[in-house]
Amino acid sequence: MNGAGAKGGTTVRDALRGWGGVAAMAVVCALVALVALCLPPLTTTAQNTTATTQTAGTEAEEDCEAPEKQTLSPSSADGDTIRAIKSRTGEKRKLVVGVDQNSYRWGYRNPNSGKTAELEGFDIDLVHRIAEDILGDPDAVQFKAIPTDQRIPAIQDGRVDMVVRTMTINCDRIGDVAFSAPYFKTGQQVLAPKSSPVKGYDDTLADRRICTAAGSTAFAALEADQKDGRLPASTDISTTVPNQLDCLVRLQLGEVDAVVTDGALAASQAAQDPTVQLKGDAFTAEYYGVAMKKDADDLVRRVNQILVDYRKDTANGWQASYEKWLSATLGKDAKKSEPPAPQYLRTT
Image (cartoon, rainbow, N blue to C red; front, top):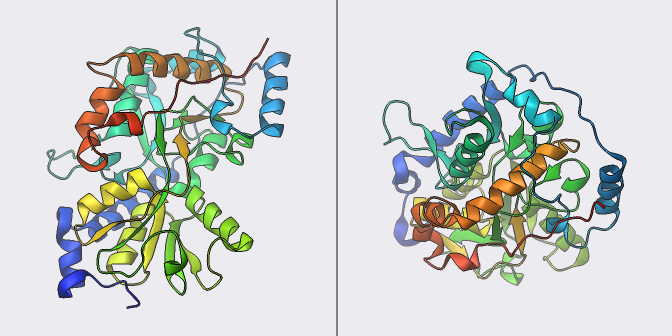
């Protein structure tokens, strides 16, 4: 299987046994995601954008050496976007958020949490915090499962108010959506079976098949690096899937030899399946942000203020969420994953 087999004669059935059957869960999650995406778009209110902010947005797109700094300064003021969210009535008075539901410890349905199998994880904690600040109720959330390649369309079409889904801030995306300040630091990394001769993001990937999620930063990096000669020309990067977890299933089935994804996600997948491991160091430095509509300035500023307060809250904020969900896979030193102090665009 060209290095894709599990160590010590592990069978495909054994590999799929961990965490209640990752493959079965991926199928269920994909079906739920399709249902969610078929729902009609939300009614949105037209946004007022000042000339100053328009200028700032244009500058952000043209000057993109540090995309994680291309965001607006924090504010607790309500604007058109937030007032529209607050004006929803009855069961619709909820923050509508695009999330993942199959990324272990980030956004996933825990089959052991009861009949409802509620979403939980690091990203989900942040969503509850945002809902509590804007609507006064941490549970005033309508979660929508969004595949990786549908994150930006879901925002632009008004199907969600925001996406909180391990979404990397990069130069291409800031032309399509607005991002909050970073809330997590990570980097692209290789995941492969422990028995594989693949050692990392290097020449050992020659003649290997790599899986990435469609529309992901990982695929863009592989494509660019192969074109520039930093990745062997014989590396097959043609396998892309709607959701990142599908790559783990492909790896377990021996259909690919390695997966490239964010190291933070890869560590959680390694926790799900002990036959795979991270190979080599991260070869990029990236930051996750909350994604919103380009003209939702008041919502961007509000989320940035929430993030400032969330990071200061040592009892129930960022640090507590990291310790609960991620310390087991990423280590107890949260400083390695905490983004630097945010920097904002000058809008005056």
